[in-house]
Length: 206
Image (cartoon, rainbow, N blue to C red; front, side, top):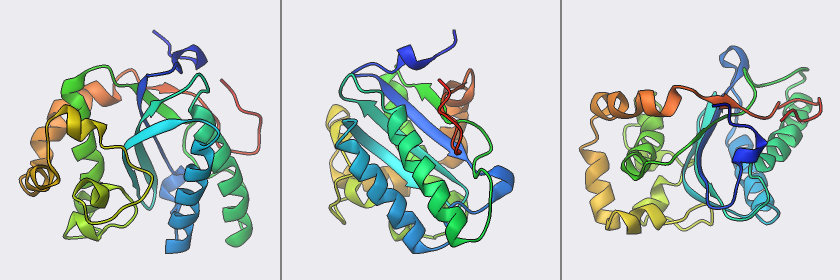
């Protein structure tokens, strides 16, 4: 079943992500990551949502997010990255789109996978060899999960639903088995993925 704009209903959970064109670095400097975080936070005031897990990576991003109103949350990412692309291209003297595909999204309906998705998202920087300790990657909300930092791009609902303390999650991530987790969720997350929004200067296509 194709998931179009009608799928974006209040209280619906999504894994939203995208990858850069030709493995281009979407974020070249720390300021680029911070700009993106600030823009997402600003858009949450217009399109209410709860962010359970997110990670900005050099050439892609992941968000596990719930829509908290009747305002579709794909607009968060459309607005954020439409503006970001213009700033990025001017800053780095380039033209054209940054993303390989329109916005990728998957509805998350199974509670079993919700916690595993958070782990998968938070483990990305270590898997990519960017850090040895996941806590050293500043551009996710893992530090909020383990009470090392406080920022607004975080809801602890998944922790509560799974009766997890911050120490429990820290221990889970210490024991994280990348191969096992990814085998468990790969098919669920990435089969029948749907596209939604173009990230360029063309009109949004829904």
